[in-house]
Length: 98
Image (cartoon, rainbow, N blue to C red; front, side):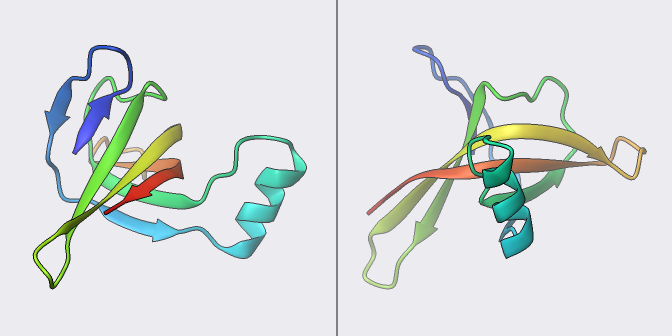
């Protein structure tokens, strides 16, 4: 679920996404240039107006019936392959809760 991170939280939608941790080299390079650490790369279908003022919420159902929630802070959004079909999002895992 993609939400705008402001006092007014607006739910954009619940798209399918590929969420993968970045490699060690990308993480270390982010630390060297003194930016907030990018921990995950997320790929979603193209959508207009997605910027660093949004967070991505991932709800993961657990075997005991509870749900784990992860929040990812968006740092950078880029177009994949120049065809306006997919977006690559560099994000930081901000919070995990059960």
